[in-house]
Length: 350
Ligand SMILES: NC(=O)C1=CN([C@@H]2O[C@H](COP(=O)(O)OP(=O)(O)OC[C@H]3O[C@@H](n4cnc5c(N)ncnc54)[C@H](OP(=O)(O)O)[C@@H]3O)[C@@H](O)[C@H]2O)C=CC1
Ligand SMILES: O=C1CO[C@H](CO)[C@@H](O)[C@@H]1O
Image (cartoon, rainbow, N blue to C red; front, side, top):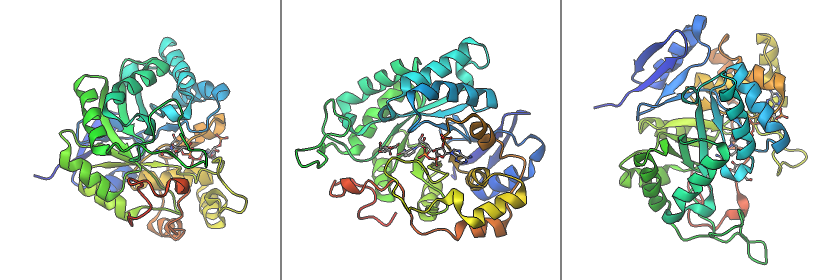
């Protein structure tokens, strides 16, 4: 029997069961009057709000306020990771809004990610417990394996040898996956998923999984539209969470002269025609593909405007222009980890 993908909207409470994303897209386009903050309902029944706030590179001194602004603006989904080293401060923002009575814990969808140095099955639970303690939460809504590649266990987040080469762990991510499943069984996380996994790696996880991943969080923007991987994930009822949807313009490893999707003239033209910002165009593009999308900002007006993408739609012609930027342009390639047996991008096409 085909499993079904469902979309639910915040208000009015309204549920629809859909057989495919194509219908989901059409549904989301036409429900203008209350298309404010849709949620994707996953295979395991949990609902993921379509837009989440990214927190990578969000400075400790700014991210608490960013989280508070986001919750006030209507965000109910925050994307975190141990490796971002700011989960304490993200947790402060969440805690403040719960204390103020603006939201209840159960209204929020909080994701975090298991870092590569904790892949060994006996380390998975304590890694999660550290994250929970920083975020000041009793459970996560979603916990992801951040990368399929394990790094040498220890205190260093990026362990290297004397020549600067990353030190690997021999752990196989399918064994990590079995440890992730236990976290669901223990009630510490509601859903589990993967990030940066390629098709073959997902197939291997599905072979052993009692609980299949609900999402694959992957880099996705017009330079890297990820059509093949997305089609594959959809065929397995795995949702897509699009990271770096704005092209991560301030990523620490960006080089002078790298193309900037937010600055592309054709994107700016579409934005001007729609009376929207280029950021809103890029976020709406993901929403119309029925992808979950997690733009990062610590700037109040951007946090707010990035969420205002449910009152317009992109035409098929505009989508075609946006997709004409496809150039397999990966911005988070982890080139210095080539040679790792589980590197997702080195050998496999997708
Ligand atoms: N699973 C994984 O391996 C990865 C996951 N992620 C997740 O995805 C999130 C988003 O990706 P990220 O790489 O941060 O990049 P994004 O594509 O979200 O871009 C964020 C950057 O764009 C700026 N910005 C935000 N909104 C606008 C706007 N409307 N107009 C112009 N500039 C804007 C931000 O600046 P400012 O903050 O100053 O406003 C920031 O510098 C991450 O924060 C993280 O949570 C990201 C990378 C890898
Ligand atoms: O989420 C991410 C952001 O940056 C990290 C590096 O510091 C990446 O490894 C990771 O994918």
